[in-house]
Image (cartoon, rainbow, N blue to C red; front, side, top):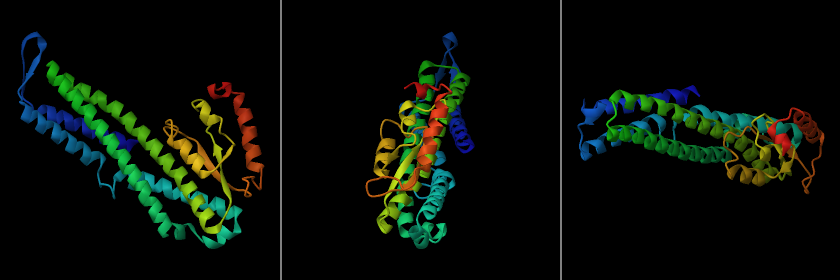
Amino acid sequence: MKAFAKRIKKVSQGYIQLLNRIPSEPVVNKKYQFDLDPNYLSIILRDGELMVDEVLLQGGEFNNFFFNEYVSTAYERGTAQEYANLAQQSTAYAATQQSVATILLSEPYQLRMALVRARVFEEMKGLSAQVKADMARILTDGIARGLNPREVARNLNEQSGIEIRRANRVARTEITTALRRARMDEADEASEVLNLETRQVHISALSPTTRPNHASRHGKIFTTDEQRDWWARDGNSINCKCSTVTILTDKEGRPYNDTLLNKLKEEKEAMKERGYQWAEE
């Protein structure tokens, strides 16, 4: 994601600027001596922490750039997809929810968005804390070892590549999580308000990198609680490309229409022939 790459690079350049604020001179054995005391080091590290928060937590909890530009859009898209899905299956739902716009303006939707916003900001705070810890470690390690300032700067730039990959993993996870969550949230709202019986059909990516325990759920039926619980444990949501589709069922959870389930079963059998690792489990 270009937005994260640009911001992480800005962070690494910021730490290089902090490094340049510390006077240094070459000494014996190609080592460098940095002229700083504990108080000045504390100031440097504090300035680094403030800079990282300014870059990654821009906008604060209620206007964070990542939520506003990416996650909220994904959540709205998921809600629109679920609206189209449920309106096609239920005339009662179609009559009650006349448009996506009415959902987006509703109080239940606004509350759901607030919960997603809070979750995303906590994730961003965690990312910011990790970046601060890693960059401070590279900086102080270079100073302690008496490395050439150019080498320390190079190490900071190299670390930024690691941080970019970590940030991209967070971004992919949060965006797809928002999309899935929006669908299940709207399904739960419909079930509660209209007394609809719904279940979730798990759809795995069935790609070469799909994890076996993800592929095993393909085409199977679960409740929204079961889906949420599964994604919440064992890192199942990290880099997960699985999705979920709501279907109407009877009170025992039996679908009224088996077309989708049969199609997914056939799809999985066909994909198994490609010999991906998940097919061997």
